[in-house]
Length: 275
Image (tube, rainbow, N blue to C red; front, top):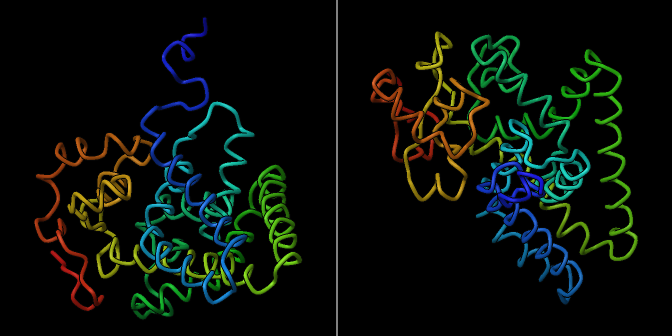
C-alpha cells in the first residue's frame, strides 16, 4: 500500500489542511444554496452578507495557505479548489499567487511591493487601501504575469475565463440573485481581504522582517484564520506550514519589538502601534 494512503493522505499533503478545505467547501455549498433557494435577491443578500463578512478572512486565509504550500497531491485538485474560493472571495488562484508572492519578495522595498501601503508618497488608510487593491489587483497581477512564463499567463487566463463562464451561467439563470450572492462575495471578498490585512505592515519602516511586520496574538482569531496573525513568523519563513507558525513565533518572539505584538487590531490606522 502507498505510504501516504496508509497514513490517510490519499488526497491532501497534510491532514491539518482538512479544516481549511472543509471551510471552503462548506461555504461553497452554503453560497449555492442561498442562490438557489432564497426567496428573492434581498433575502439572498441578507443571508450571504452576514456570514461572508464574518468568514471573509478565514476563507482568504485558506486561500493564502494554498498559495504558499500546495494542499493536494494533484494539480487538478488544487485547480478545482481554487475555483471554489475564487467564487467566494473574488480572487483566482494564479492572480493571488502572483500578487502575494511578489509582496513577499519585495515587502522591504515599497517601490516594488504590489501591496505597499503608500501611494504617491502618502500613507493609505484602511478604506483607501481596500479600494485601491479592489481596483488594481487584477491589472497589476496581469502586468506581472506578462513578465513571467507563458505557462503562468495561460493559467491566469484559464482561471479567469472558467470563473466568468460559471458566473455567466449563474447570471443567466437568475441575474438578481447572482449579483446579490456572487457579486457581493467578489467585491467584498477582495476589498475585505485587503482592508483587514492593512494593519500587518502599514506605518512600519521596511528595515528588516522584525520591524516591518505586526503580529496579532489573538487566539480565537488565529484559530479561525489559520494562524495568519503570526505575520512576522510567516514573513520570516513564508514556506512554513501554517500549523507550525505559533512555535516559530515563540522561537523569534524575543527579536520582535513588544509594540509590534498586538492583541487588538486598532479600528483606525492612525492608532497602529509602532516601535
